[in-house]
Length: 399
Ligand SMILES: *Cc1c(COP(=O)(O)O)cnc(C)c1O
Image 1: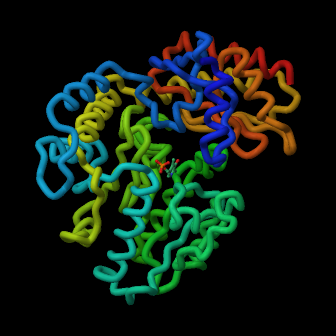
Image 2 (image 1 turned 30 degrees about the vertical axis):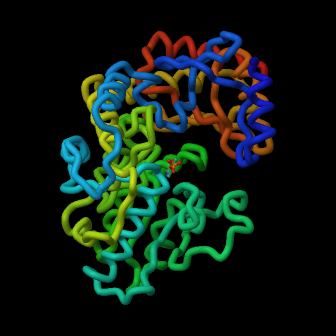
């Protein structure tokens, strides 16, 4: 079978809830992927930052195979000999007292919101059913009904009502509007420290700190959705560390699974996590031994290979070099670490650039019409990065 045959199958049998770039990937290693015809590409999406450690990192694959040969799933009805070790490692890595494991990013967000609502009643003293949570415009928190309720993207929202009550949305980067939206029933503010899906929107310096202070002053929980920005992507372990704006709850996913399987979690200190008691939350697959072993290896790789510092250094080179490219439709390049985007003029069809990049051997995907995100696996070497930049420069020169 050839690429076009696989694409036909997807179209014929799948729901049409995605519009993928016409390329089929059948092999991957490190920062490279291949199609069935044998053409090689740089992967500059990294599965939306789920492959920070690179495709099929040998240490992560070893952990997967070793664990698959002993025990894969127990459910939380019994203890297993992996989960506790994983949670300890995750707590030490993040600097929080407790962790609660789930599977997907959307579930981590759901868990964070549930924790905040319960905390609101049991600790803050808000009446159950009255809890309010503030979110911001252009957010992306996943695809559950609660997550899309927070969204203001019409595609995500339309015809899925009735939506989940209790959310108030304010403009991004507007602390005054946030402060105005606070009531006695506000239990949390949730945001992405850098908005990934919105097009890698980096807030002005001081924004995260201001939100942190606002939460502290008003006895509100600060929830950071670090599902995409977390695990070294932006040049720090977590993006909130750029401003030392430590959240009360962090939602984690994507790269926690090392590009191998879905692993997510929230982390928080005891004052928040204590609201969960037996039977009040759970997941059949959350904390399973296979996921726990994979996630431990994924965390080890981030530390051993110093991927935070490396992402920081590579990101600097990327933005410097891209800014030099002569392309009349390019407005600017922005980002932190290896989470970057090129912004084109309004109305420009970035899709065409993505097709041309594909033909030249580099895979990236536009977000909205006129923004392309560039987020390679963090293990990319400087030589590989410069090779990729040369491809981007060559292609952009034609636009
Ligand atoms: C990807 C993402 C999610 C959702 O994660 P899934 O694993 O797709 O459910 C939530 N929040 C942010 C910021 C994300 O980038």
